[in-house]
Amino acid sequence: MVEMFRLQERLNDDTNGPKWRDGVTKQGKVINWKRCIVMETAELIDSFSWKHWKSIAGGIDLENIKIEMVDIWHFVMSYLLRFHSSEEASKMALSTMKTSSIKLPKEWSEADNARLETLLEPFETLMALALVKSDDELYHEELLEQFWECVDAVGMSFDELYRLYIGKNALNQFRQQHGYKEGTYKKVWNGQEDNVVLQEILNNHSDITYEKLLGMLEDVYVTVE
Image (cartoon, rainbow, N blue to C red; front, top):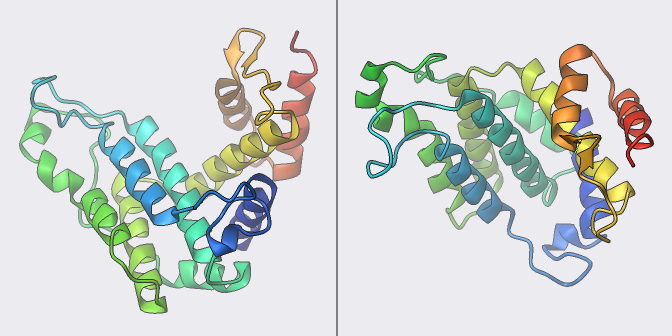
């Protein structure tokens, strides 16, 4: 757990500058981590066929929901790191792990259309919590508990969250190191987007370390024309 918080801390230092804990980027732009949580959770909800005017068939993109959970985790950690050290935030995260009575189906059925509102409850509750104007420790614990409830509802294990987070963080760091903000980074690698290449590496190396993953990304990137 603490490794993820430390990696997020380093990524924020590299991408946002030294004042991100004060709520501003190195360019002076305001950072609102809780709004980021709200918007990413809204993107997660769009992985459900909730729009009555678009589809009556229903369905769910479970793999994309898991990716969105990892994106939300980036912002939850960043928010907590404004108030706590990596070690303190890690202990709090471990102590607030919670299961959910709601479980998303692995295969969508017609019956699931009727309980869509129930299935969305954990995520809408997380959005509502992120909109609360509070920053005390009790609130931090409540936000974490709801995040873990969402993780469990999705059917993700801690190991899966960790693996996907390590992958996403490594790719973000790799992009920054290779000119992403300057516009010189190549996102398509020999016909595949970089996130697809990343997923292939993760699928083939389930126990890969962060540093090893960065090295493997570099090995592929140097072959890109």
